[in-house]
Image 1 (tube, rainbow, N blue to C red):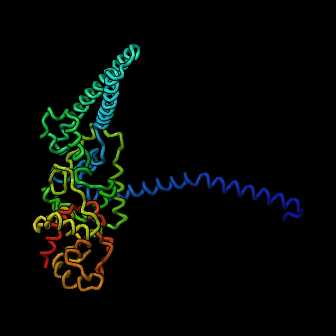
Image 2: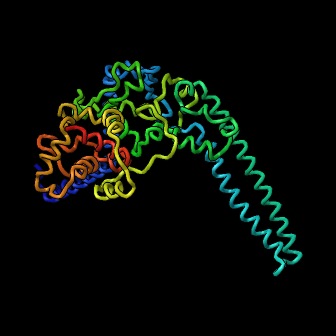
Image 3: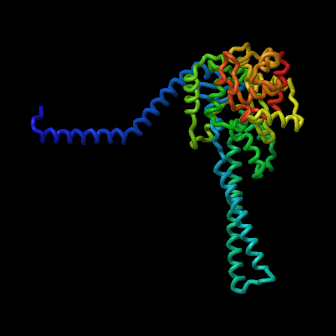
Length: 411
């Protein structure tokens, strides 16, 4: 079509430049395009999750996610998302206290210099020290004023939440004497245990992991906590015998997490919640810092038990197995994992007979099965169903020993 060589060369150059411009334009806009794609994908996931929530969850957790009295906790609430209503005031108190320590040290150093009999300061230096100490005292008075004002503001905010406290927000708050509520350390210890939902249940992971894990495994013992819940929260995932695929679990979690307002929660949001969650899945309240998890080294765990005289309680283990950790949801009748009934007999007669477990005791096998579930999977079952963090995050030494003691009764 183009006969002259010069025209062909010119056409080629123009087309090359045009292609480079097009490629550059695509490259520049690729990040924005992918971001828009992510937004669209997330939006569709939230929409699908909304439909699932309306049909499966709204009856107990409320259409707007505010919960229902003695039926199920609200999920659309600031406490669930870890919002601290007095975080600004607490930070001001913390910073002021740190500043007071520094100012006090500076004042002590100046006083020591002023009163040094061995090397007394000159008259000019004494006057300078006096002026510096007066300036430091003015700063100290200012910091004390900041602390007093922040404590008063914090108390006013917490007082405005009294109606929410009656619905379960901050359990045991009313057991703290009014005189102690102004004490910085006292209130800090209280909020470390009750300030967020994840702190209450001792969950070391993030909120998304908590929501998804709860949806997968349910709350087998929740009927004991929520008497009006029509049987308690079931395991929703097909992995645990439920009805939802993993993508549906993800969609439902996306919808729930979409309620988060970040730093824009208000007092009205607290008061709108009809029912707050119980501190722990069994309704108990943490009073002391949670013990360290057992870990994922079976040899060290068993050695520690022997050294510290840790013995398991089968009765406590049964409760933990059925409710706290939801083991029954997968191990009942061998639906998604080996049947609970006959566990100890199978361990002794079948598992320990396998070559890789030569030298193992039954206790050693069970501990490893719980804290390192991916190491060995019984035929026909997948190791991915078993949560991998029982030893590193969820179970203390005593809880693990109790569960083992219970399993030893399953003959």
